[in-house]
Image (cartoon, rainbow, N blue to C red; front, side, top):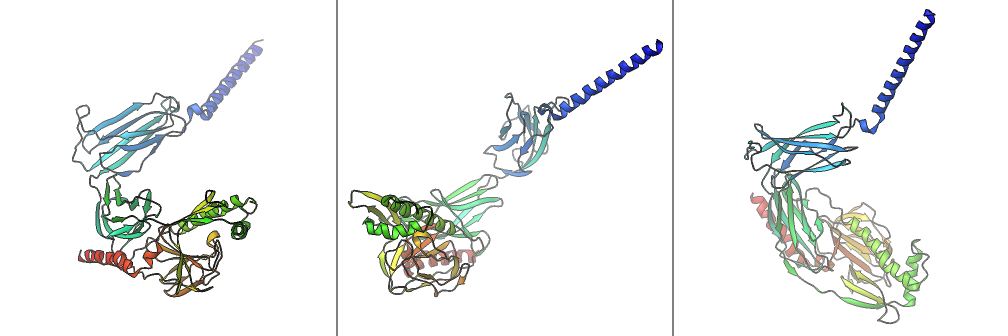
Length: 467
């Protein structure tokens, strides 16, 4: 009987230990798998070494995969330290928080930081709501070095074109100086123009354009450093407004059933359109928009290699070429009656005609960047001449150059034709500055080039060489 009793006690004790062990394993498994006890540390998003102007608040982002609980920010000048932010986040499910760090201009708890210090250390501590670590949560501590910089970048306009005409181009050469420069560019409205290093470090040049269908123009150089200091300098152009031609064109059935239908049938996107007016709008507006977007994309690529000098000759692409259509022409298409306007478009080049299948030459050296068919422009070689200047040659019957070919001035590049949306044999000559169509007439004018390009570089060169 004693043996049985002892055996039962041992068996009961063993069972109890098994239950306890099972419970411990279960609790351990719960702790290691439950989101409540997650072990991922909060993230503090900031660089280890930054610049600050002390005027604007520093923005530091902290985040956690589950939820943030608190954060603290301490600033030290190397001798004294103050806590400038200490917050317990009451909302239970905040996964991200942007901390706005402001410089303490007053003493905190009797401690004042050295206002003349040029470098500070900021320590950020972030905790999450995890119950890991005996309910203390996960913690991240990050130290960052903050360099104080009050000075705005220096921007000096060395030389620029005296004037710019609506639809036209201009040139500016300038200098930017700052030990911690972050970004700089030319800006006109919402358009940023990329600048090209010129002659020496710190000097830059850029062509700029005024879109023909934009009434107002105001160009400036914008420079910003790593600390957020910013300088904006207006470029003193004399502004010349210009009115462009408006044309009313009758869209005949012959025109729609001919050229328009031919273009529509060559593209599966428009091939099934049967209604004449819908087909006209699709080609004249939608296809045109897609073709011009491609041109703009290609003409927005600006190599950033330093330019020692840049010379351009007047463009004269077609010998004895006669102008048959103007740049900037706003064309209104009507069907049967002038009151029934059915489509609109802008003509963003200059049409020139001479003899049938006449030879087109490049008046300036450059690199061929496109040699394919481009919808309404037909066979269309496109050439880059440096400084953000591109030329296009539309409606060609034959293209005589190859993609990526480097060509010299005087190189035959194509033959005129009537591919694309052309009703007669001619050349559509287009000029673009950083993706914006500009007046070809300016770039065909020797005097304009001398006054607005050559003289600007010459004036800038004298200043750079004297330094």
